[in-house]
Length: 248
Image (cartoon, rainbow, N blue to C red; front, side):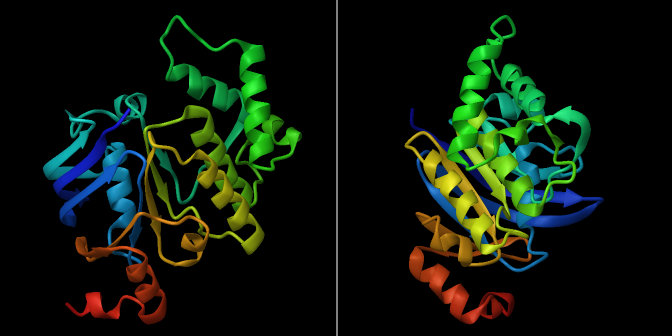
């Protein structure tokens, strides 16, 4: 499978205030694009708008997934068509175990009359948690309740691994992680890289890009794409910060 996720001249408002001011960006299947920028630049707004959050109003522009317009599709419809969003701040759901949550999510992506067999699901789940170096008792805990920052982020990557999306938007996956947790999460993401998966990796810092090598880097400032390039752009940001783009 080949294709691309296209964002074309996207304008997005939140509470009547325009945050994104004409974003055009393409993520090809098999490609990792690093979206970088300072706080308040609109990176998370872009992730929510792509995923279909109803509070983020698209006032102009288009989102096209593998040639199909999804700009007005619901979040559920976008997810079923292969979009995945990893939250910067994952929410807790007391009373719902990790295993039950993941099985329900997976079945929601399957044909209605073809739910995954329980034994097959647990075989799949055990395979995935081993790959992410997660203890077996993790799946019996309530979703994100009492989880450390690293555990929450591993939960997001575990969900991505179970659902096997076509395009994943990872919103500051490195936020709040220590060095060891960052390396484990990065390894989990790298293990899923394949020609059918496009990734938009949103981050402030270069450190996660030491483990996950992007094919392209893009700089966003004040709701606009200011620059794009390869590894040399990432190195320039690490050395100089965002001042030169903020001043433009």
